[in-house]
Image 1 (cartoon, rainbow, N blue to C red):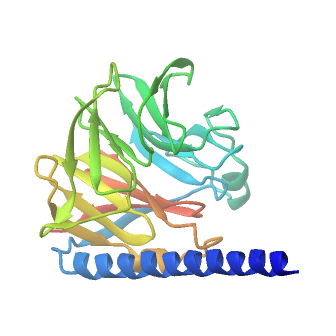
Image 2 (cartoon, rainbow, N blue to C red):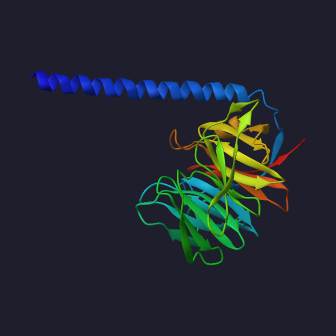
Image 3 (cartoon, one colour):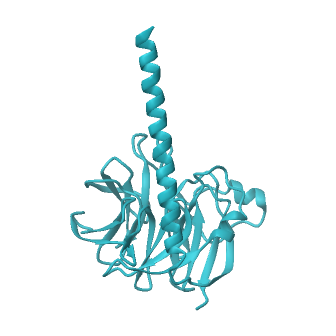
Length: 277
């Protein structure tokens, strides 16, 4: 009897610690959000929108030559897909239209960030320390790399593959060896900015989603300083998303229009936004 009571108390202690951890994380995220609210706010307007399949748990998102490339996460469900900008007219056809290409990952991998460099797609995985490389033209497998730490978001500046891992650090990998050649620490007024997620490199800056924050931040790639922020709160709250993990996550630059496609995990839509400053 006493042994059972002891196990029960231990379980209660674990639950208390777990709840305390969640509270601390929530409080920290709120404090970080308050700090970023003081950053220079970048105005924007929505100039177009498109449907987005709600079965995509968006991790990496990019646009090239009229097509979207997207990685979708979760164990046993991870894959990369491509599909055209143009879509059918009817709502039913939009929902049922097949992907142009699809490549499923083995069940033991959780797909995360995706980027495109020199006609090759680079995909990192969450906790498996494995990066996959595929040919963009047909999704055929090229090779894998191993790396240390977690994989969250990916982008490229044309020279490096840039990776986030949920911390304040961004890692710059050699695309041929995946060795880390340099890092930067992302901060706003010397305060570390954590939970960096999906990434995009455009117009000379790194743009980053923050996990569970409806903000996109603009980062100086040399210093790591946050130089501006876009508040997507109004856009996000108007969507009927599935659950609390259906967060803003997805930044794809349209170089021709000089605008960004924005979406989120399991979102029913994506939006093309243009800076108005």
